[in-house]
Image (cartoon, rainbow, N blue to C red; front, side, top):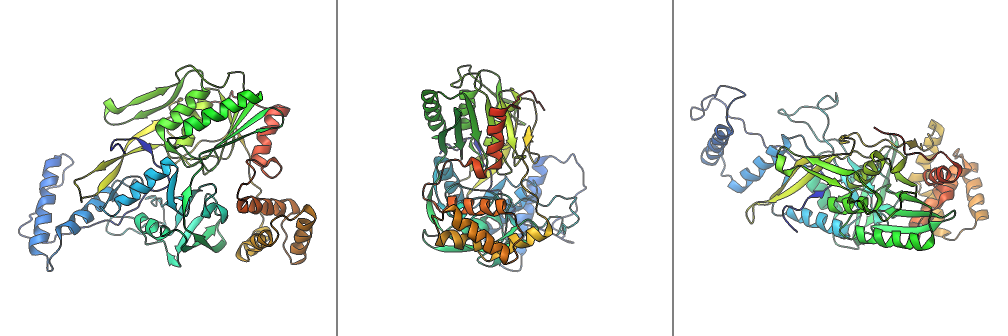
Length: 487
């Protein structure tokens, strides 16, 4: 991999343990006056003095490598940026796995995850020597489609509270990753909190995961459906193939589904956007180094005619590169956004390698801005047409909690993989008889989702049980489609 290759990494930030050095009443280290004008060279000199003093005077002998790695972790911790962190030589393997993700293959359970820092204004944050504790969970940005985590029903926004029954509260991201990875065929147990009350454990069997990046199909009414699962190096060519297939089929409108898309490579999403935009800015990056600032624009030879209306589906699992495409099409009045507000990752990272054996570090070097000049970091992109999922009352939440903890839906589908509608209706009636108060439609949707997850080749789309997709189809066929909104 090019060591300056620019990637839009998402889902694997690390909140690392800080290394703190305190020196009290040491004659060898007189107090220095505090001033905002002390040059960097003076701080480097102070660090060198502290480093040498620890090596020479600490009660126990300390490996200088241990001091260096601890100091590096503390240095990046001070940035309060979950996407910038130091990696030891052993942890550089994490980078290799991330690179494999962008190529479409990696080993693990198929979760894109985040461990966000606690904001300083959070009353629950407990300062520790001037630092903040990590939150007591790992947040799921998105399960990768078709992977063990996806098939187990883990959803964007779920929080992993334990891994193999060990709390994640005090784990660094590196420790979380190490526990989730392992030999294919072995099992790891994760304890998940969904919402505020529903907690359940699920066994995930690790595997070598082939991540499909594009799926597509024609829908009734000459509607082309394109699902972009992730932006890898191969994505642009696969999107081109899909668009060529749509053209042969005589499509008149296009739905691009980016729900659960955690991002990927910047060059890939820029290329895909150029297939769709007749002109205009796609995205711009801004850095402290003005020579690194870039503006990416559409070359003016799109593959999709301007007469073809486009709707992009987004949700809270749409992050980074997928947000770039959504914003580019929206701000240029080329597409309408439908679904839920996206994740909100608007920064760009580069990886810098140190000497052999000294690891590497990933550093946020720029932020990206939409064509309208907005940075969506920690904010996300709001859809033009929001489609809310049903809000459950307390009784319904209690019922859902029972179903999840008892694996009732999973067990039914596993025992009845090809259950006809009548069998599903009898199963729903049985649940109601046991006190489950969820609606028939909601329960049917749970069953259909579980059936799709268990299929080796599930349907590419399912309008009947997908309210967001159904709304997009209605907008295209019954009126209401508009790209006039701007932000």
